[in-house]
Image (cartoon, rainbow, N blue to C red; front, side, top):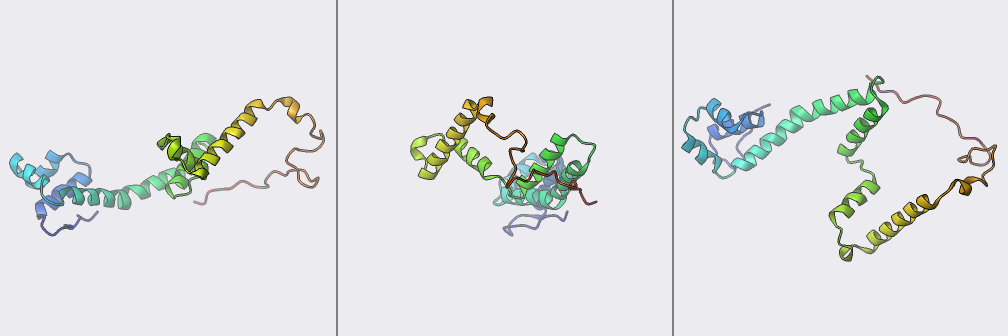
Length: 177
């Protein structure tokens, strides 16, 4: 990873070097030592300069983006494609990849929003309607009994359309190496 340039132009080379070492995972004292800062007072002043936190945030973001995120994605892909792994672990890896790519199911987004805003007085009409619909579905599931399914034809799978039985997929999705 290249050392981050100064964002504000007023930071010293020493400050940029400390930020770079911090982004690499060193503690503040070790980063300062490697950058040649031996005085606690000088380190304190450097940490309080304008832009230090912004430069550190940018250096961390760069390291995560350039070095660590690709490794994490590779690891998740290996787990997802490893047929020796438990199915649940592989599904979790796939979901994590999709979530990080922004393919979050709408229901999950609504659930997170509902948890964050539990004051019903502030809910929109759409949010209230979704809440009622969810409650209705849950109630129907709880009240359903085996007797509700006795009227289905016995020789036909319940998911069949136009009299044709459901078919299993011919092949499994495989991961490309």
